[in-house]
Length: 150
Image 1 (cartoon, rainbow, N blue to C red):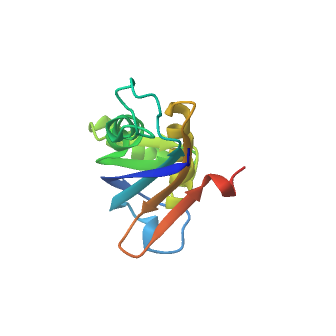
Image 2 (spheres, rainbow, N blue to C red):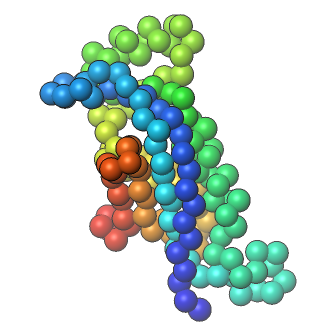
């Protein structure tokens, strides 16, 4: 049986700031992110299985990505906890804002690496994460490929 790639797309709104950056993105701002998640596997061949013919049920993939990424990052502000932005983050938390503290600079590049680890940990053993595409704007995106990270 052939390997087949399945892709599901998601969108969420997230704010961030890049500490120490020399451009506008040093300021707190947000993006309407689009995330494409592609997995690869063989379709189920057991005709008695309710998922017969599927690599993974789109709803199962959706559940994983929503729980690990979308529901966590949507309408949150992400800060690197190892920078002075921690003070701003703590003040926002005190005002009941949804703040996520990470141990990396919250660029699209680093976020897509983080997302890949979270998703891989939840996929069934017979399914592999093939790639992620995190689109920050209409013309800017970061991509992660399993084949580049072996």
